[in-house]
Length: 225
Image (cartoon, rainbow, N blue to C red; front, side, top):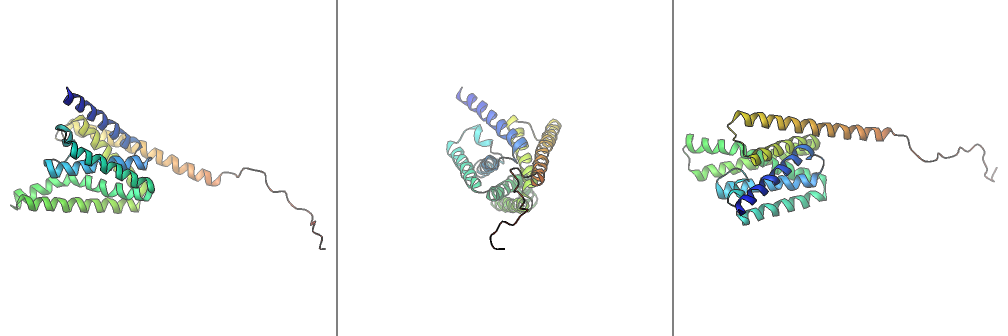
């Protein structure tokens, strides 16, 4: 019974966090930083200790220590992100880049072990290098264009969280259709928010100043003339 309740709880949490990132991830940097740090840290711990590339592996047979470390990493990331939007964007860029790099980890592991005939320990180090490089690329992109990068990153991670929470198989055509549909929805919604905010900022620059205008001085009332 407890396992069932935990499964439902993690399912609901995954959907809530995923849809938040998908639709509103660009607007609230602190929450976005927290969620992405949670997802990336959990995935990394699952990769190291469970040989899985998804944070959801931590919930199958809950390891409270690993889950605690994951939550702590999310809180620390959110705290740092709250201090500055630029810090938040940097954290999101690095962690999201590493998170996306997990997609290439399995490919690199297969190539190194099965085709290169190298030991698994070497494959793990190659995978770690890929994650670090992916994180640095994500950091670079977010520093170059924070708003657009945040939209793309939050849509990608949000879609991935939803798909994994639902438990859809990556090899099914239906999963591809759902993934593309969710990603397009997130891009449309968040980019529309972004355009509205830019338009609002431009209008505020040209808005007329309120308040009484200074009265013109037609006469020189000074005494020295």
